[in-house]
Length: 221
Image (tube, rainbow, N blue to C red):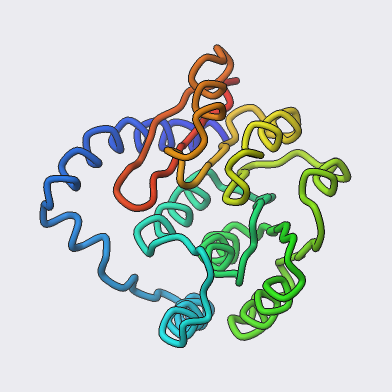
């Protein structure tokens, strides 16, 4: 099953290189990517409803665009991820996109947030979406708190202090399983991180620039 997921994922990452170029030209595919996702199950419908509520009510803070959220979900589900780690919970918007995948894979999300107010708001949103049982919100400095992680990780998402991206990478990469993914948002603002993931022979990185700029890195087997 892991091999099958890896083959699918490799094909997807190759397709992204060509897709992003067409989307920057304002193709029809860009409009399709920005359309609301369709719900297949009641659980999915509840999460999507919570996402709509958060964005419609303005209860968002430095969140990912919808196009990037959909990509997070797609990559996570394609990888068959069971253990996702997110750095930068904010108000839980990106976390809910992960939950769309995790309610299918049977996985869990551990998400780190330094601001107590945003962490509390994120918990409210996770409760609204009916996914609290699969999410653990950790408050405090993620640079220190990630040291407590011990289990293998399938997907890491970094979307916090840009100057800290490289430190997060160095601390979490040993936990990422071979064939796992490291995703980084607003990648143009983290040049040291970009250099690290593009010069390490144990990693393969492509960049998806349709939304806020997403670095997609595969930890090679």
